[in-house]
Image (cartoon, rainbow, N blue to C red):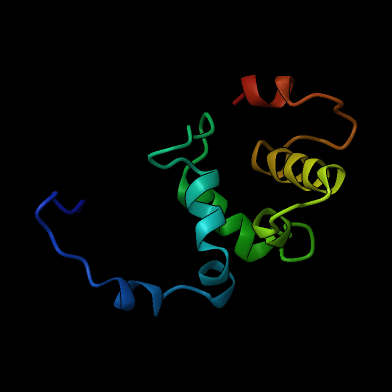
Length: 103
């Protein structure tokens, strides 16, 4: 059941049920999966991104997105890896166009 706009949610109780990895990346998760100031990815919701972050600790490294002056090549590489995983892209794809539109 989705809460109404007048529902008060205890954020601490919600956070206490989440894995530590999700809690540490909650800002990235919110912004990358769509929020008031960013568009969401087609066919990808917060739940799918959260599961990917929790499960793929070896590949999904979000800390670079919190750096004030990140290395743009590293940022691009990590961002593309996250997108490829979200859209189930195979490593032989140079573009995300095919896997994104096949969803």
